[in-house]
Length: 176
Picture 1: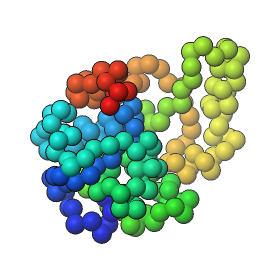
Picture 2 (picture 1 turned 90 degrees about the vertical axis):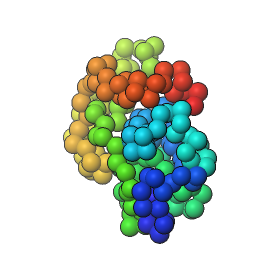
Picture 3 (picture 1 turned 135 degrees about the vertical axis):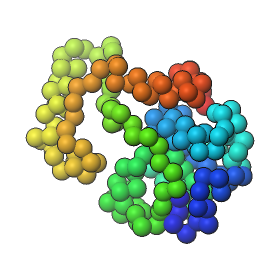
């Protein structure tokens, strides 16, 4: 929310323009959507009609810039986006305020690769990322992280539970 916005709560956004980042984004769609549903007492199917318009910007940065430029009334985005964009000089952190926060997203921001990549390349990528904290600790600090860790498919179970609560299949997430 822009700091100068008259809207003080999620309920104040009735009939307003709302941007999500991407249909398949956990922090830019799934969790914000679930939070809005909970706060408003609406189903996923009812949520879009609460707002004047609902759209996807194509990315967290695009959503934040749209909000900064007055092209959206509110957005759902990662909590890391405002400080990252402020550090780049594109926005000022003090120009925004948060009116709702989702539950924490377990597992952070995963880095994934296609299953058909050559095993040698996968090994190189894994070694690079798992040792990244020694090679570029400033980058990790800038995004509030200490290191990359190897994950497993079960790390995505909480996200699957949110998608299930939204009554959205993986195919529906990508069509949204």
